[in-house]
Length: 222
Image (tube, one colour):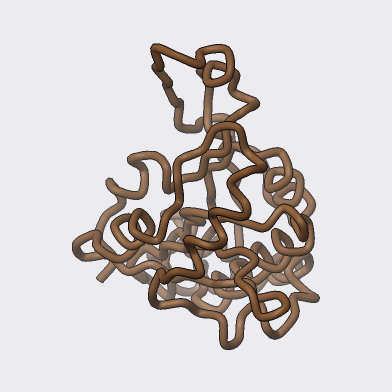
């Protein structure tokens, strides 16, 4: 079918590059020199996007969100609360960070992050495992979630933030926030005995890193 597009943004090159990470003076010098590029596009995120919105459970509000938002994509993996709990709460030896966006007292979107074990001052990489948003506030919600993810990754001193996604709206905002497309990315396949015209068109799909086996094969971080 094609590839799930991979994007990355470097935050702390001293952590991201193995050649630098083990030598403390070089690591800190690289991180200091990169400081002007680190926070430029993550400013302006509302306080509510990061404070008081960390979700430690996937409840009925996530089912309600999926019922509202799933209509915008012809083809997608169903993000029920049961699936999200299995994927992001029950993987042995792993913990995921979940940030939720609340608008008008209603869940309007969420983003899931995975941080590798910290080494030499911080994790070498963080990943956006999943992102889901309400189409009625698409650009605003996507921006809030991505900026909140960047701020959390900076707070934890992650070397870089990476994600795999197939969705034009999310991809456009990633580029605006300083991410760049990486050539190597996961491929995906589809087989169906019916509705082939619909399912065999890559542009009809919404996919994220959490829909692949990438997050399953990540090393434990606890």
